[in-house]
Image (cartoon, rainbow, N blue to C red; front, side):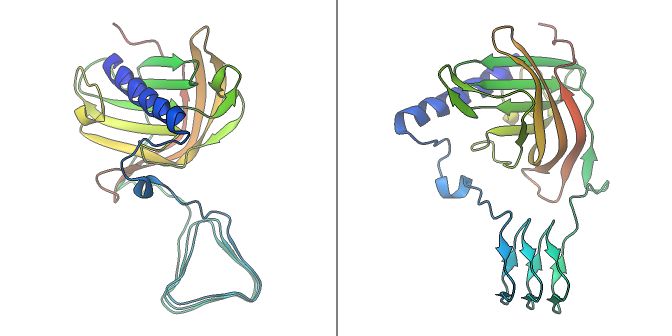
Length: 247
């Protein structure tokens, strides 16, 4: 577990160092591929028409009198107001669900490990399902949220959104690696990697000098990076309550 922590830490620090020298964050080879567009909360105003084949994204609102034409898709969380029409072939997605046939649910940790870097505000909290191998590993990584005179840090009690499943671009990263072998230094040494693209983390205790960290994750939904048809869900999980792993 320590090797995996070290690997994650130095990979992140290298990316951050490059970010300081270039005045931009660039931890991925393909900038266009690793950028997640945020179309949440877009609004289609009264009288507007969404044409054939258009997509209304998460959180969008279709107002009174608007029409959604054939082939259009209204995604999770959207609302359709009084008088709106949905034409043939349109679909309305339901909220996030965890299908027990395709998603695993929950996580039970047994041992933990923690690495913190105060200047970069880096926190890597790792919790494993067992002291024995192979085992599953749940990892929360936080990096570079708020700049201060002392570098980068996070605030206790503030909710942070988990909304980027790309390990190369996420700032609030939550992953599950399954069947990790002894001495695993990265996700490549594990069978499957699930990465969360939905959820929230609230830090309940943070002290870089004392090396303490506690946080609660809620509403986390993970996707299988190799198979988008399967995933993992965690309703709630508390980091920082488990004993440290044996050296």
